Length: 269
Image 1 (tube, rainbow, N blue to C red):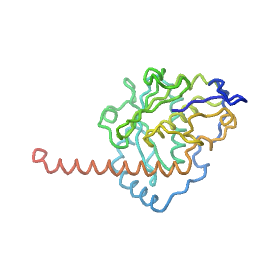
Image 2 (image 1 turned 180 degrees about the vertical axis):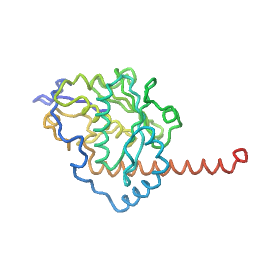
Image 3 (image 1 turned 60 degrees about the vertical axis):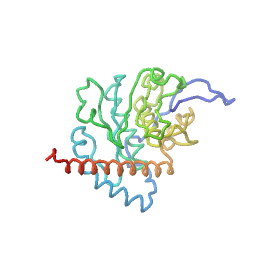
């Protein structure tokens, strides 16, 4: 969950109507510094990239997503645009969220799953969720889905208390849209989406004291338009890559086990 607040000189909240600063360079992922990666993690992610190329080729063909970048663990986000966010705004948001995640060493595959959408592919949206499938709802009223959430929160992630993987999050488009700022709606929406994806991958509602995963995004940081303030930290990036790599291995292991069981079943021959 993230909220945008303005702090008064006394350190008290003075509301969420914040004139946000313009951010430059969001759509150019090549301009940022590369995050350090250990040799072991590099070997693991390269291997996983090769292993998943064939298994995910169908997804890329169906969704029109960018091809998998070898070395980047990938995961899919099923997007339900219940609030009917304009296509151009959602596209910009997904690009920006993608930039943030790529800077952390990951690649998100955005799958349009809105019921009634002409772009919806039932074969992808209705299939059984795997270890690396997340679900993101864009909604008008966050309180309808999370009654106890703070009134200024932009999003909310459901984190199971039984240790099961977190897979579902909400982002309130109406709250993002009414911020009224020089910071475009698409940019802010993409940052909020990346923040909630971070909660799901971390499997935690905890926040950090700096970077994208802060509980609050102060006005002063938004006014400066400094994109580095809205990225995952280096430590978080390493953790996220390890988490997604582990999920990929489990997912591939489950597929292998399922295939073996199918091939040994006489009824399948």
